[in-house]
Each structure stands twice: as structure tokens, then as C-alpha cells.
Length: 292
Figure 1 (cartoon, rainbow, N blue to C red):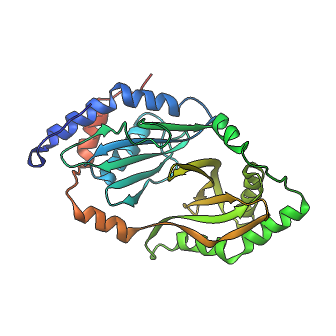
Figure 2: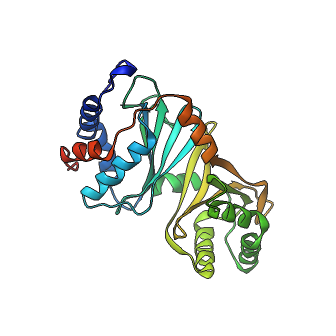
Figure 3: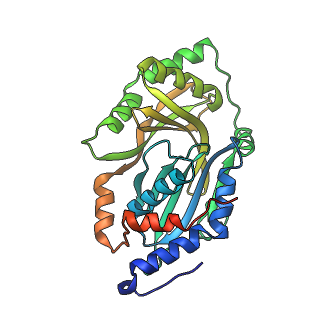
């Protein structure tokens, strides 16, 4: 679907028409089928060319999954990635993996799958599953976790770098939306993950889900552990870089990939976005069926 139009003519009727066409079409249906494939699906991305306002998209997705019996497990956040690339971040419907809806800003284009963006190939959707991660792990000679390694993990979790990152995410007034904690380690992430799950329990925090996945940066897959906490409702991501010479330690920059509210606000003010209201979103959903 390729809908282009002069900026001055994006009427509510046209927005509704384009949204109904896309969300009742084959591209969305195929993506949802992938999300519903089973618990072996760990994470997914969908990429779009669009000038839709990301908060409007987030509202539509929230209402869409609620309408069809799959309410979201957490609030969606909007992340500024670059000046023309925004992330409707961590869409986590009941029974599905968490996933991300990326908007590549294109003036005079409402919504079109971006077939040229995908990191691993020229595709507009990507999935990471158990088999992908097992293949990824094989390149690293990980060390199993014993009593010595467990003690080193506990030292890391008590350390300044890890805790500075957590408290930055907890600060409602600090304007930070997203970070990655950063470490070097030789430990297998699937063995490290339950130790950090125990860490949340000791703090009295409620964890909804945790998962080991990768993301792509400059053409290279990088591993991370993602902790989707319910109370407090924050997402803590531990990006790890393999180093056979250490058990686990904070990197020289203990957290980065910082996304801020100030950056997002600047992007939203810098160009025209097409917003739509709750009533339009409901009219769209009224015309849709969940993909079978």
C-alpha cells in the first residue's frame, strides 16, 4: 500500500480510509500471525514510512488489542531514535512477545511498510525466536556460572553503574525515557538472566517478563537481556559485550543509548505530523477483524 497526498489534504476521512486499509490488509495479518505463532517468538520489529503522530499510533494499537481480547501488559512509550526515526516502543499484547513499531518520517505519506529498512534483510518486519538465539550463542565460548561467578554477578548488581541506570529510569522528572545498562561478560545470558530475576525479587519489585534477544547496530547483532518490570513499570535492558577475560563488569560507559523527552519533543516540533483522535481510532477498529 502506497498512499501519498499533499500535506494540506490529509482529512480525517482519508486518515481513516488508509488505516482501515492497512490494518485489514495482508501485511498486518502476516505480522500478527507471526506474533501469535507461540512462545518461541521472543521479539519483533515492524518498520513503516509514515507521517502519523506516534502517540496516535500508540493509542490505536492499545485500543486494537484490547478490543480483540489481547490487552496490553504495559503502557507504550515513544522513543526518539534519530531525527526522522521514531519507535512506538514495547507493544506487549497478552499472549505475544513484546515488539516495536518503527516510524520512518516521510512527508506526505500516511502509512506504508518500509521494505528497505530491516536490519537483517530488506524486509519491513523481523522476528527473533529461540532458534535464532541458539545460533547466535554458538559463536561465544561462554563460561558456566558457579559459586565464584555468582558472587561476581552479585557484586555487579550492587555496583554504581547498574544502580545509577535503574534510578535514572525511575526518575519521572529527569526526562529519560530509555537506556541500556552496559557490561562486559563471559557468562551465558540464559544463565545470567535468572540471577537478575532473583535480584528483582529481593528488591521487592514485580517482574512481568524477561527475555534474551539481540538488536542490530552498524550491521552487527548485539545481545541484551530485557526485563519488563510491572512494579515499577519500567523496562531495564542490559546490553552485554562478550569479553573472555572477565566474569562480568560495567563497561567504561556503564549505561548509554539514552533517549530523552527533550529530544522527542524537539523532533515532534520540527515537522508536521498527522494526529488523529480517539473517536477516529474507534471508528477504524469498528471496521476491523482480528486476523484469522
